[in-house]
Image (cartoon, rainbow over all chains, first blue to last red; front, side, top):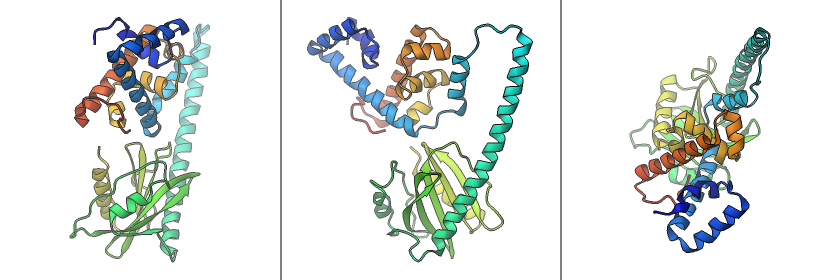
Length: 243
Length: 69
């Protein structure tokens, strides 16, 4: 595409052109198939990024950096006063975050263990009863604002899918999938990624909680089976959701 | 698309996320990051080009119109 307007496509799609220029560009699009196609592609790309971005876990320091730079003072006199204030603030922030993360992480692990036990105690532990992942996964359509893949289990696999249901933690919907390994049950919880992280080795003396983030989603495997079983099921799920 | 965003260098990732997800104007991004507006525009263009190229390379499509996230 060799067109003088080419450089303006990004600005047009972002609504950054002056009204007169935007009008002129719109007029140009009427007669330029190349620019029209490029604009359409950019608009689709922008839309896809916006949708994907809602599930994309941005690096935690990204927005912090932006805020820090946005509110950086222009002059810092006397410099040592600001340094002391900044150091105190950073120390406070670090301790606050560490304390909050720790309590949030342990709180999340306990909530998931409670949910797992509640499921096991229920007469109807799952709402969709099926060993077929092609039945269980579609059942979540329209029930959750995200989707995920379930691993295909070989016949000789020690794991068996029992079904799934919708659960809520921290006011957010998620999937709880129930698996069986030998005589033990395993709950797999899937939520949209949040800022709550569970220590990969969390749990208590009875239950194992294995959590990780992948593809903008947060996964937790909760079971009273051996930690190795939780690790193996996690590996299968990670493989199934690798893009 | 998520993988395409994830593989971007932080410099490009932040501009793209601020423009397309936070819906900030070029001027706002420029002030927030402390970089000239021209740099915002060039980084944004490069980020989008890289996302597009990544999607095309991994999906085998020639165009990205209608792609799912």
